[in-house]
Length: 185
Image (cartoon, rainbow, N blue to C red; front, side, top):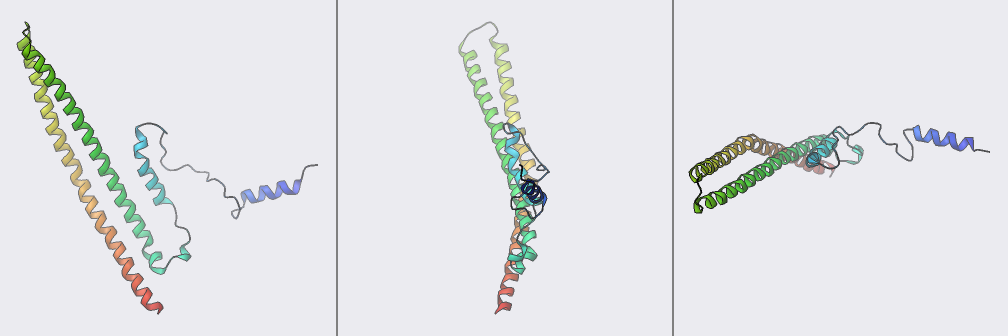
């Protein structure tokens, strides 16, 4: 004979908010990425976003200064980390672009050298084509350097601004914790 009491108790505790075994949340993380692929590189920002949205626990165990300034410090840190991630990704992308341009430049120079030492009927046409490719690659390199500078100017400014805000929030918490410690004496 089945134990109906056990089944009812189990059903009650699975639905109860005070359950010994926490139920899985019925919502998905805000940002989800495929396991393998390019978007895996953005997982750090998705994790930061989840951390920003997660409520703080054990507020009663924290000091008054942590309760007052803790959320501000947490948000400033997450903002700072996010901008740092964006800056890192742009630097990595810049490095990849420059490496690809350099590789194509070396390939074109090797072909140019081969055309220069060989006497073929279309040597002049091939030389001008390869020299044109080299000029285009030089232009692409300059354009990438300029685009990198333009893209990172704002990110660098935000990085310094956010680091100043984070430092100021930490300083406010430190000052208040000193006052709080003096008051407890």
